Image (cartoon, rainbow over the protein chains, first blue to last red):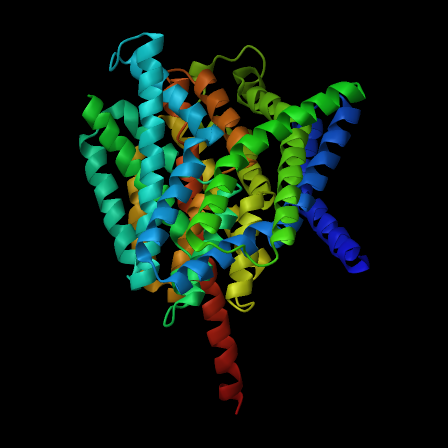
Amino acid sequence: MRDNLLAFLKITLGSLRDLAPVVLLVLVFQLLVLGQPLPNALELGLGLAFVVLGLTFFIFGLELGLFPIGESMAYAFARKGSVLWLLLFAFALGFGTTIAEPALIAVAGEAAAIAADGRMIEDSERAMARYALGLRLTVAVSVGIAIIIGVLRILRGWPIHLMIAGGYVLVVCMTAIAPKEIIGIAYDSGGVTTSTITVPLVTALGVGLASAIRGRNPMIDGFGLIAFASLTPMIFVMGYGMLYA
Amino acid sequence: MNVGGLLAEFLATTVGTIRDLLPIAAILLGFQFLVIREPPPHLRRIVIGFLYVLIGLSLFLLGLEKALFPLGRVMAEQLTAPAFIAGPGAVAGMLGWEDYGWVYLFAFAVGFSTTIAEPSLIAVAIKANEVSGGAIGIWGLRLAVALGVAVGITLGTFRIIVGAPIHWFIITGYVVVVVQTFFAPRLIVPLAYDSGGVTTSTVTVPLVAALGLGLAETVPGRSPLLDGFGLIAFASLFPMMTVMAYAQLSELRARRRDRLPEEVN
């Protein structure tokens, strides 16, 4: 119990240090550059206390829950030896965590508005909702496929840099022929897919798999799943834009 | 501000976080009990860990929404207003890209400081430190990524101000990343590629998007929809370069340290 409390205090101190730069930035720009007083100092202080406490709880839970479950499932799948189930799990994890991602829902809505503005689709609620849903499904499927590719890479030990470089070439080629309106959205959709809960889980899964399989180095083979998850959405979203045009 | 209102807001944020967590929990449970067919070791600890993550994320998001985001958004708006940049009475059309000094500085500082506070980056740094046996420092990695995001977002704001097409910047960046891959230590490459994707989640995206939208609204001839976004893409590209550069520098230093005693002998 006392050890837990000590660990908690230590993480709290770490959270304070992590947030110091943001607080400093806001204070310096608000008071010195813009020359304005701080609005609602009380609410500000309370909010900051929440952020520090929240970050502390999150990191505490990370080591207690998210990392262990990711790794224990990786080991269990490796013991079971069924590649098909593992790949199915990989797809479900990628698809399931992305389809409900709030950042993606926001970006898809914006994209539908742009498409309606540019007369790519009909300017009606229904057409826009259909376009946005199609986009979300596209991104979610692409992340699911990305995790499958990433897991296959860990199993087979394929070199990551050739695959990523090949992906970039594909992105560049598609940029040349995709409709202009979709390009910005496509590039951004790569970044918004990986949420705060998904990243630790997927990282633990990759590292766990690479540690469980003989001949794989967790450092070289364990990382890289997130990289695929940020690359394939760009390719798929541009493809979606081309199909719609 | 009353306690009841705050509690209601906390509950609303928690419900939102539960909704994000639910599909993940369902997939994990489904595969754990239907496919693997045995409970994971330390099930109780894992459940408690998930509860901590849930409480932590909810508090974190609520605190950001209460304290940092409103202020950050207002600041982004004020800093990009022509009246602030060139004195009262200025019109945006008269300004050149070199007049936006404070905007670049703000963009750099926002990119750097929000990345240091990004929870998913902390998670990846902890894991990388553990897996590399301490060879990759938690702080070294986080500082390298933060520097990358800062440079990326500064360049992204510059792009919005001059109105250059985004794909030329991104394609050039890819070429640099691919070339750098051949010279970087092999161990760092997958981690470097990953750090591009982890930088942009809870803290960075809302503040950076506000900055981009503010700029695109005030600079004449920019469309908030087309130009306001796109900063995120810059923020995920540059960390790959800085993380590889960090590993190259550490390798160089280690090599020099190894060589020195030999020369003395």
